[in-house]
Length: 404
Ligand code: ADP
Ligand code: MG
Image 1 (tube, rainbow, N blue to C red):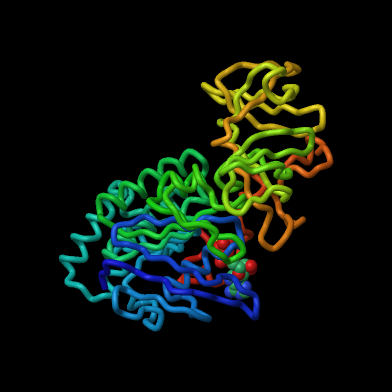
Image 2: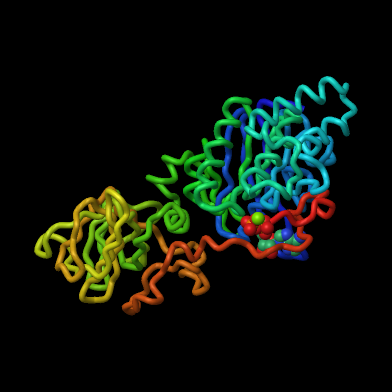
C-alpha cells in the first residue's frame, strides 16, 4: 500500500517490563530518507521492527494515511527490509535470491524475469547474477539484499545497519549507492545506524534516540548547529564537553566558569545563573591564538589529517581541548584557545539530575583526567554483539545461514 504520510503515534515497546522504546512520535513523508540514530541498545532496531510488523507494539499506533497499520501482519504491509547480516539464501544464485519474492507473489514469469534483471542492473551485479552468495564479497552480498528488497517496489524500505559489516572504503561506496537508489527509485527509506556521519550524509531528517526516547528530530543542519541537549551534541561531534557553572546570563549569552576556565557561550534550554551546566564545542570551532588572548594550553598531540590537523592541548588545570585546524602547531607549543559565543553551546545538566556515571563518553570531570582514560567518541560507537535469535533477525534468517 502506498501512502503520503506514515505516522507513528506514541509507539512504545517493552520487553518483560524493560522499556526498549517509549512514545516514539514520527511522521514519515513519502520520498523521505529518515535515519534513526543512537548508540547500541537505544531502541533503533526495536523501532524498525515495530514499523516492519516483526514486533507487536506494547502501546501506541501506526498509521498509513488514514489506515491503521500496526494491526496489519508484516507480510501485508508491503515493506522491504535490509539487515546487517544480509540474510540471503546461501544455496540460491544471486538471480534466484532477487527473484524469490516476486515468485512468491506468483507474478507472470516474464515479469519476474524483467524486474529481476532490472534490479540486478540497478545494484550493478550483472556479472555476478549466476553466483552463489558465498562467492561474493560482503559489499556485493549487501547489494543482493538491497536488490531483493527494492525489486518488490515497496512503499517503504527499512534498513537496519546494512553497512556495519563492511570495511570503511566499501561503507562509503555503498552509502552513495543507497542514496542513489533512494533517489532514482523514489523510495521512502527508514535507515538505522549508530554512525552519525553515515546518518548525516544519508538522511533528510534524523531521529536521535537515547535509552528508548527521542532526543531530537531534525535535518542534519539543525542537529549539527543546534543540538537539543548535550547527549545529542555528544553524538554530533561536540567532542569538547565541559562540566562548568553558569555565572551570569544576559539574553542567550552565558558566562561559564570552572576548572580554571572562563568562557562565554550560548544557552540552549533552561540555563539559570548559578546552575551546573555542560558547555560543548566542536573541534573545528575552536581557534588557536596566543596564550595572552585565549585559554592558555600546551599542545600534547598533533595528528595529521590531510589538509587539517587534529590537536590535543591541555590547560594548567588539566582540561583537555580537542581542536581541528589548518594551522600547524608543534607538540610542546604554548597556545591560546578561543571560541565565539555562538559556537559554545551551554546545556543544562540532565533533567533527571546529574550525568550518569555509566556514560561511555561523559564530560570532562572536575579532576584532571589522565590522557589514557580521556573520553573517546569512538567508545560510544561500539557495535552490538552478535544477537543470536533476537527480534532484529529477519523471519527467514535461520534458513539464510551466517554469511559473514
Ligand atoms: P539498538 O538497535 O538501538 O541497538 P535494540 O532496539 O535492539 O537497540 O534494543 C533496545 C533495548 O531492548 C536493549 O536494551 C535490548 O537489550 C532490548 N531488547 C531488544 N530486543 C529484545 C528482545 N527480543 N528481548 C528482550 N530485550 C530486547
Ligand atoms: Mg540494532
